[in-house]
Length: 219
Image (cartoon, rainbow, N blue to C red; front, side):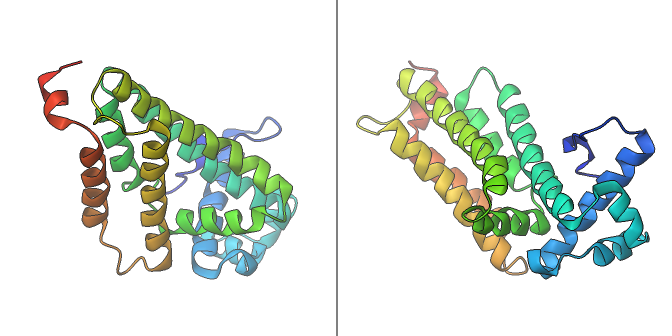
């Protein structure tokens, strides 16, 4: 979808709507190029060619390749954060429904995109050497893990988890499975089975939760 990262863009200076649309278009193009060529294969010329602009136009909006890389990561991370936060807020009454919705959201547009998966893992690999990448991604990822842990804690407080299950271990296992499925998607998008991935994540979730008690509304 064109300009799908536009809503996540927060320019450093006020810009006209046309400039913001162009930035969003270029960020989408950068994600696509990284998905095909990797971080090392990203060039202003490739991004420009993808949207029918000149490399000078890309440079006008981002000043440099370094800025384009940073803003691409920021947009992808921010979009993920915004989507997950909105999904949780949409299910305030039932943490199990919120967790199920998190699974669905991660395997549907706008998040479910091969280029974005490559962006996430490529920048993660670079974060050990680049503090600015780490500062952009790590706090948001930790926030996501905390959001998931809070939902499991709500289930535990309501007596909807099986006895002796540790909330921290459960939330880490759940997030780890989703990360693993995304990694599989990043490695081989053609072979990736999206319905099976969703079913796998939901199966784990329901194995952790006392579904019968949840359905009866017991606390």
